[in-house]
Image 1: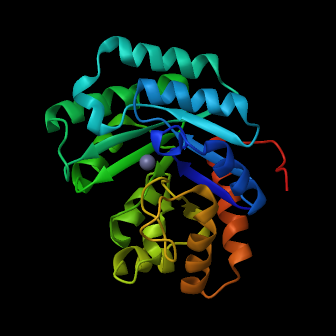
Image 2: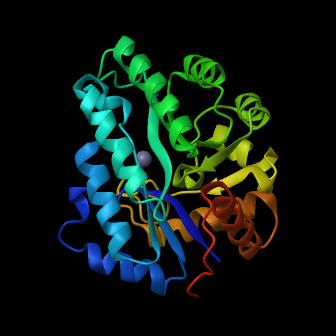
Length: 260
Ligand SMILES: [Zn+2]
């Protein structure tokens, strides 16, 4: 079994061939894809895709880049959307802090992050955390929220930080970046982290793994991340796929039996 725990199939990068991308994932052995909302418009699109395809699940939320454009009624609409699609909306996110690109002011990012953590608690949904160059503030905000169920997506911290996340009850998601020669920190995390705490993700259309670098990323490429983690851990890739898939299903409460 193999799952892509984090992709963005609703994004415009897939407008011309979304159907083929989804089919290709299925034929390459990807049982489920979780497609992740990043603002209201794209969350609506993600939920529509999840309604349309049995093997797709969705999440809703506002990415830190969009924090500045977020109004009270945006969050109310997201809450309503998640509530109305309980079977297919499996998490709240991605939410968090991005102090690398700083597209929204940091104050605003912190405010919207905090409010959405609260909202996830009200909805009783696990959270998907985005943290780029904001490790300290992200951990502080999560700790203060009391939320103890979720995943740090596209993990970019070191092993010490990963341990802190695990202590909080969170999973760590390993992206295709782990296949890059220079990505020593995430490779170290993948080696030392128990498989039982790990998810795999593509973050498609971004972060294309080796050997497809330079192309748009897509869920069928998740296999390369599974194989790289297996090589690092010196275990069969099927075991990596199986355990991380089970972790994903546990976290997101996905109960149906897989198609393949
Ligand atoms: Zn993402």
